[in-house]
Amino acid sequence: MMVHMTGNFATGKLKPYMIILAGSVLSAAALSFFLIPYRIAPGGASGLATVLHYLTQGRLAVGTGIVLINLPLFLLGYRLIGRTFFYRSLFGMISLSLFTNLMSRWVEQNPDWIPDAATGAAPPDLLLYALLGGALTGVGIGLVLGVNASTGGSEMASRIIGTRMPWVSLGQILMLIDVLAVLTAALAFNSILLGLYALVSIFITSKTIDALLEGVNYARAVFVISVKTMEISREIMETIGRGATALKG
Image (tube, rainbow, N blue to C red; front, side, top):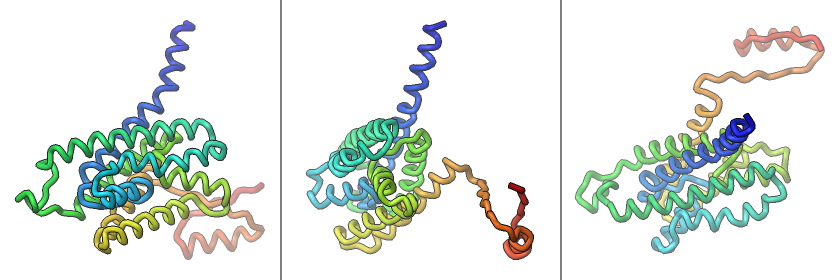
């Protein structure tokens, strides 16, 4: 009985890391097959690492760039965030970096898998790759976030900033970080079009994460505390067209 309980405990401790590993592999595949080859920066550390990869003419691998960008964030966040989130996120970041390097190297050695006008194949559909890359990234990150972890980057930075500025929402911080990354990519690549494709990818990623974590059809409830309950309820039902429930407290 004790052995059985110990086994269940070990499985329970290991399961989140298996989910993080699966999410990291999916995110790495999105980067390596749909985004990096076409200079579509997906925002956050991955987007900045993509920019650095091209600025160094490929000498700095994207996965290695992800580690270098995240290292100061993890050193800063060790005392500011919970240990569980920290260690799981560290595992996620390392997994994402490792698999991104492995898959990107494989793609470079097998260019036929990446359609390119220069090889005589069909011209790449950048919008399609931005959509596919964003969706696959969203599934990967959604899996990781679902077990109280991240792959570093903007998610880690938003947690750290949130501890210092709690009046700013995590969503606003994430948006600001991703927009800055996209602007950096647009300037570095001298292409507004690539920046717009990156924004499309980020938008699809966020919507996919929301659908995965909250469901496609989700509802939100708002609690309004007031002495004018009848007036507020009437406005909600007649003007907004939503339901209202009165609770005495």
